[in-house]
Image: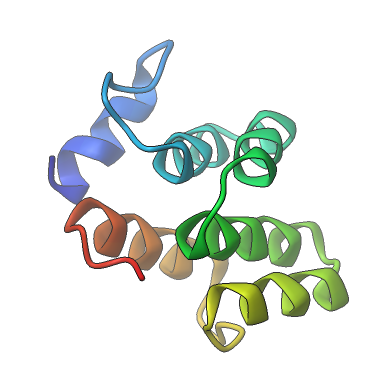
Length: 99
């Protein structure tokens, strides 16, 4: 799946089948359901989930918590807009380049 297809799917009631938990969390975040996105990111292991988790806390405005999760993801805190970062995370995870 590419980024355009992923983004277009935000108009559906449920995320596309077969997405990893981090991508499911990003999908729900893209739909504005922060709580559902956070629950998925928090429950998933690994650096990809930590990256999504960091993004969500950055969106929330809890930069201290976000910084903790960026560290767990092995990434610096993004200086991009939240939308740009969301798209960058989605593109990298969809391409299978997450760490």
